[in-house]
Image (cartoon, rainbow, N blue to C red):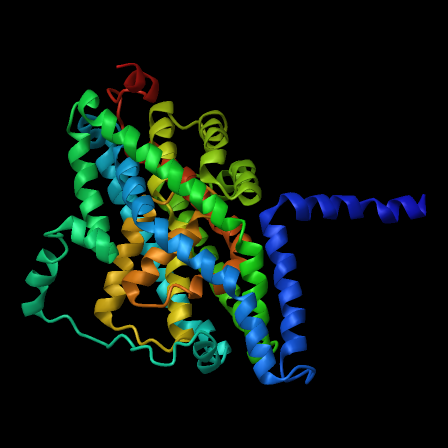
Length: 444
């Protein structure tokens, strides 16, 4: 009995590693740490030139992963934002509830971004790693830092006008992400006002594009364990174990920010929704646990609606609109994680972010969170968009792969909590008796 109980967990662990990508990444991260330590000067077993050659070969999967993500990021963002905006279905629906919901979601996302900027600026997790060695390992010694620039009053009109791309195709070709995001927002809003039969072919095409790009992402994610192994081996061979302290500080920073966002939700529940705090959060427990385990807001959506209607007694007209819409565009946890990641990498690569750049990052993160697919792993793809807009080397995304799964679980739980909190808010503040239900809207 003692022997069998000792051996029982082994098949479970083997199955977990074979079937779960996050487990494979963690194992690869650990193996890369060991290999990097052996190749590094602290072990003094391999010559420096030989170690560099080995780590260059081991970094091939990481570079391939990055290229694939960069290849599909533009069509994915464009299709996702438009589909996210058109999910409301009609202008009438948006005017009665959607406009208020959109303003609420924008406000909470802005709060999340502000919290993220404050926390990461206070803790400065990027300073826990020697950035010069990181830049040397990625051949980024000649990178030009983003200059601090103050936005003068005379420049504001031109800055606003320049947000609209005069040549969208050129923006697509050059990868100007903010222009692409603005173009997608304009197209998405205009498509809502069109009859369904007119916009349906385009929406079907965009849905197909989104599915194709997500399939490519799933293929790229198969390289993630090899990318994490090669990158961790390369970093550890140069930095030693100090790389772990930097990633640990980054994780702590994100978790502190997410916890602060939960406190904001608590204030909304208590003072705006007028609900008892402890019992309300207790009722959210099942959706939160499912979100933490699946890392997908879309998967949790049916349980969230059921919890809202049966346990929280929220009107179905509210829950059946707010929760599906929130799962699409209300990504407070994701937005906070992205802004912390951008600042962490900026500190790591010694890039000085000025006011204008921070404003650009914030707008891009806000818009990109609208179209972020509610599936596990897509946060890393969306993060690449913001890094490009900020002028930060997208190779930094690979640095975060090893710890992304744990943070993905946590931020998805925050996203789901935000959707349920929004339902409580609108159930209290809005009295909409003539608002059609989701079923009525689909049947019309």
